[in-house]
Image (cartoon, rainbow, N blue to C red; front, side, top):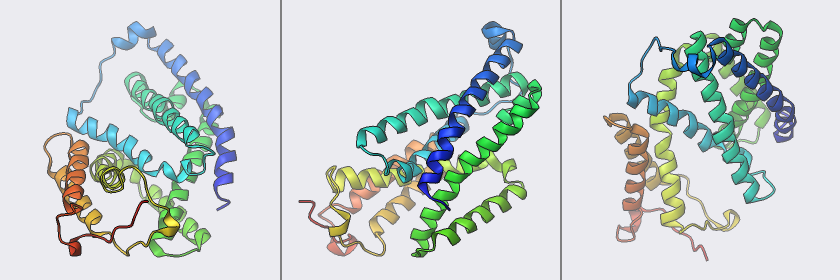
Length: 275
């Protein structure tokens, strides 16, 4: 509700502290596993097929990538936005995925909080839980506020933000965490086609240069984009292999076909001069 500055200052404190906790936990865990040699000797107790694993990994990354512009738009320069994004996804998210994998392998717990409890660090666990949830869900609810205000065409950001927090809390209490893996598979199926439409619109339609938003008349609905997204989502959902990549490819192809100048103008949204 405070806005972007509140997110900024909370992250300045929470992220470094959590990074230290994670590195400390990894160090202790690898030591208890008998070092790198003992770690390699661990045998997983469950299995997941390659397609599901790939969809989950891509779903984890693509969900954040689709929403990342909600924050990078505040960067002072494009260079800072690119560096921050690469650092967040390659280093930050990569470290958390590694931590979950090692925790599941050593302690049979993928949640960093449960791993810390298994190691006997109660106080650190409580602090980690607070910082992790707070610094993650504030961004999630911020995203809900931005998307909700755009969807409902309203300026009542605080009300929409509180509504998002209430919905998220309700889902958590109802046991949404039990459906985390199916939810990640769902994200990995239905979000990538959206990226395919965005990339096709930017590179194929606008040739890598968007016009100024203030000078561009926007339609209520961009039907070629919606149809292309639906086509990409259907292709991903029914694909027997690598649904995220299939969805991106199908959505990009469908959008390129629908925006072909040879098609009747009634099938396209009015174009603007990119000058």
